[in-house]
Amino acid sequence: MLLKKDFYLREDVVQVSKDLLGKYLVTTFDGVRTVGKIVETEAYRAPEDKASHAYGNRLTDRTRVMFEAGASLMCTFATAYTTSLM
Image 1 (cartoon, rainbow, N blue to C red):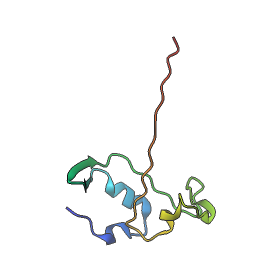
Image 2: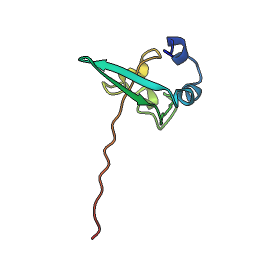
Image 3: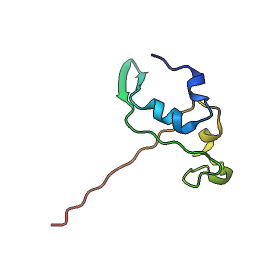
Image 4: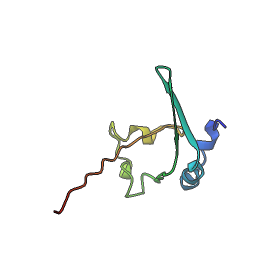
């Protein structure tokens, strides 16, 4: 089911985040379709949320999407490193 924009425009960002869990993100680039299940989300209530990159209305190229209307997507990537203690 394709989610309509009003799904994302709700006031309670924590509930929106919870409601996204279990949904699928589907993309098609250059004729290649990819599908991924959303298994983790985060929600921030900027500008007062100190955990948010946009805390205190901090507008940068990185945070610009956080100041746009709902239904915008911000993707972050985490890289894990492991080291051997032996």
